Length: 145
Image (cartoon, rainbow, N blue to C red):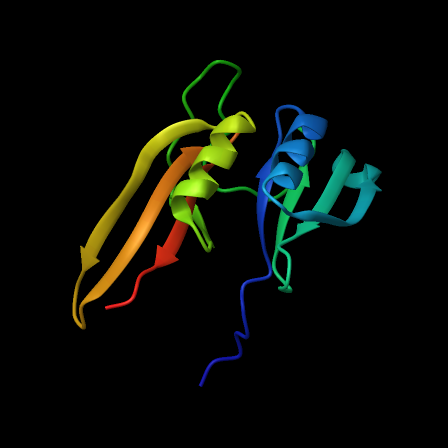
């Protein structure tokens, strides 16, 4: 038996806090709460809600001293890969989500495509982008059959 009831949030340390907030709002997330926490050098932090859920993307300013895995990428450096590989949003239309993210400033990672996965057989339609801070965002649409 598990005590886990869902996914609460994914946290991102933004290179440009305001641009990152605007990027996720352009994907449809909405501001839920913001705060500062000087004892952790957090000047700006916010939770953006995924509409219709109790799940969030948490955004911290670039100087915040928060728990993180791996090493932060320096300006102009390719993000350092760690154990956390990407996060995924379920979407109604993976192609539309991909193009919306690109229009909002994301870079292409994997264009929209169909995948046939495992047992029992599952067909998914997905796409991936690099967010403004180097985070890998997957958009996944489950297809019938």
